[in-house]
Length: 319
Figure (cartoon, rainbow, N blue to C red):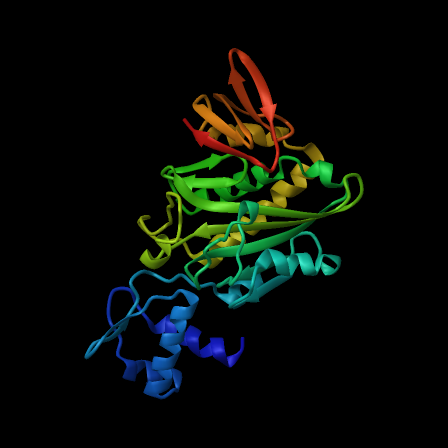
């Protein structure tokens, strides 16, 4: 960690979301002048960290700001763990280093300056407020064997979140996790390689932990986070659990395919047996969602006929 982030992280760890702390106390504890503390706090705004400042009281966070414990991450993840305070994109970093990586290697960041979602959409990635991570996996059977992988990843993340008493969970085909019917997490899988030969996968995922009011205004769909839980999960422990679950499930997926995961998906499928529309430019298909098949296609019943649909340009909507 460079000094730029060393001091900022020390300051953030002193800030609370319930009580104010004076600039003088912060300066004493981190070994900086009051002016330097003020400058660091002002710079934090560029990374999406809101800090309330009240003359005579000091500084306070509007909400909890859950940070990773870097040492705990590296000590408890069996694979290589690349940790960054800031990075353009965890997926982009892993894609640049695929030749050097092994199954289960993971990149984790507190801030992304160019986070991406499905179809190139921006993924809002303010410092410390959420989980941003990308894990590497190499499939020996090629790209064709990756069909349905995003559904397995969603099931893995749901399983891990349940361990931390996260309630109200559901999944939306092909790559979203919801809480209380609002988007909690997204998955972006990027592939390189060939259809029949060895294929490199970068499995990116983002999970909303503590959304600020400022960044909530930038999101164009209903969202959820974990702040309404009785106790905010430890972000580090949660990430370690997700990593372990992903390794177990991806190994099984390589051996058995998607079929053993279908019951788990159906248990959390928000749209099973409900009316949906599939948007497929320039047309759409409407019908009743009947879950997924062994290839990861969404099944839609229209006029008594069930048909599978799959592809990167399909969006599912409730009717």
